[in-house]
Amino acid sequence: MIAAGRFSFSALAFGTALIVLAPMPALSAAPVLFDTPAKILRLPLAGDPVNPGAKAQLSCFYYPHFMVKEVDLGELGSEQLSLIPIAASQKKPTCVRANAPAEKVVSPDDWTGYFWGVKGSYVFFSAEDGWNGGMGFAIFAAGEAKKIFEDAAKTWRSIKLTSGGLTMRYQRVFGASCSLLADRAACWKQIGQDTGIAGTNAPDCTAAYALEQKRTPAFATQVLRRSRSLPIPVRC
Image (cartoon, rainbow, N blue to C red; front, side, top):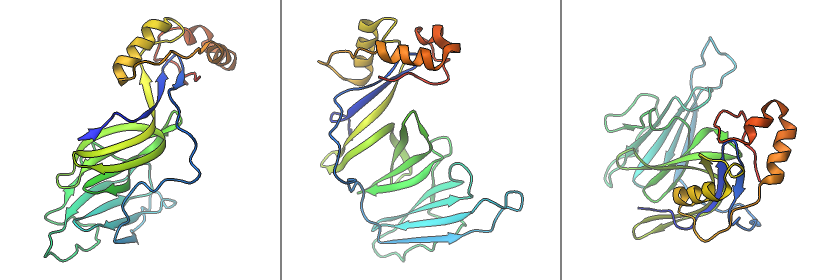
């Protein structure tokens, strides 16, 4: 189980605002989120003559019960992400490009970013690129290479194992579907239903809308509407 009850949320409303709800205090140092791998191997791969500037690399991250493999051809997103189980009496798998018989390849339909870290039997992958000031991530079960959770975060505070799974605390980037300026009460209610946030007051985003209208005059009218067609969302 992935516990979703202790997030600090940022709500992103297209055509509206990026609103920060219950922001977390700044940390004095970056938190240690993940388990330390027993070994890391990074091996160069043959380059692509069509794209000589790309640096292809094979990376293998060894943990007690599995290995994470990332094939990066130097383009946006990994070429392959996969997991290889390691039994107690089994020799550690070799770090090679060719797939092992027991290797479980992450489906590109599920994720195409990069390896990020491991917590217990949970494998975290980051997105290939940022999104509205945050970064997407996905969590996979190591034994099945199956995606069990995904979201986007701006800052992280902690990731902890519990008896039922994981508890994570982070500032979330959320894509809302309504406009806080067009209908503040109804939109805030919808955001609360979508995120589980309750008992907080809607922020006043009037100044943020005005600033975005001034910054993008070609979209001044659309900024006020409930529209997903804006090139950049406004923030407050």
